Length: 363
Ligand SMILES: Cc1ncc(COP(=O)(O)O)c(C=O)c1O
Image (cartoon, rainbow, N blue to C red; front, side, top):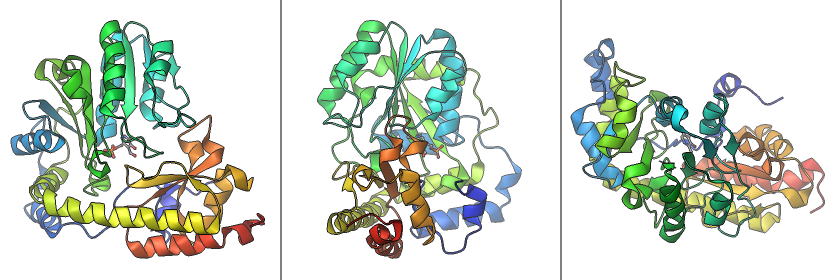
């Protein structure tokens, strides 16, 4: 059975390469902001309901949607939950992807709304195509587009998004554009620019700034669109104040931090790709990944993805089997997170290099 997160957290020296969280030394400014906030005992008060004004403005500028309304949430996932539950009465069906990130489909699925998750693993683009959307969309659908796509690292081109937006507009459907991994991508486009009247963009501080434990994210939309969610928000007492202080500090040093983060991430992705190629154990699914993770197809080894993850965990390296994110293809791939110290990636590489021998797969 898979180890629980509690057990994994208690394991000293574990290389945490399974949740796409960032484990580099954080910017000094962020640490200082957290320390100052704790010292000033700000944890004893509530933050402003929608978030600090400065933070909301910085987030809108950072994502590239100045003038949009920003609602700070307790992690992106809490915003997604509220969005799903609030909009459920006007949604006819959900369209997402397999593989994907399962939670919005699960939230809406619980209300009885049908969930369609066309397979994208074998699409040349490794993204949802407009033709797949056209085959399932109906008036009042909600499209959940993860872009870049966790777990494959693919991203949508602007032309692909335009074709999907056309279908959404024709059917009066909504699009949730999950931009959790946008900071790691090149050539990323925003659905909100193409379809402002029907798009919610979601944003996270867990990955690019490494604040997963502080639980801070945002939902962004045109004021009249966002109002549907914020008239009765899920967090009327505000998202955590310490996290908001950390986020403001991080956004102020965004430029140099992102340069460093992307550089380390890119080199780590290349290192993982190299060891996969050299060992011939598996094939990288999307190269180069636009995320801080990459997927490796291990079908040709004959092993189940969970067996591969167990073998790495025996060496104190935590990566994720595809089964967490893909009912249709999950046995065939594992996902490796890469915004981590290069030493961890070296340990991963050494462990991967001995996998064939340890699992009895002929080289
Ligand atoms: C696609 C996607 N959306 C949202 C989240 C959750 O983000 P947060 O930590 O801000 O709740 C994740 C976390 O893995 C994710 O992969």
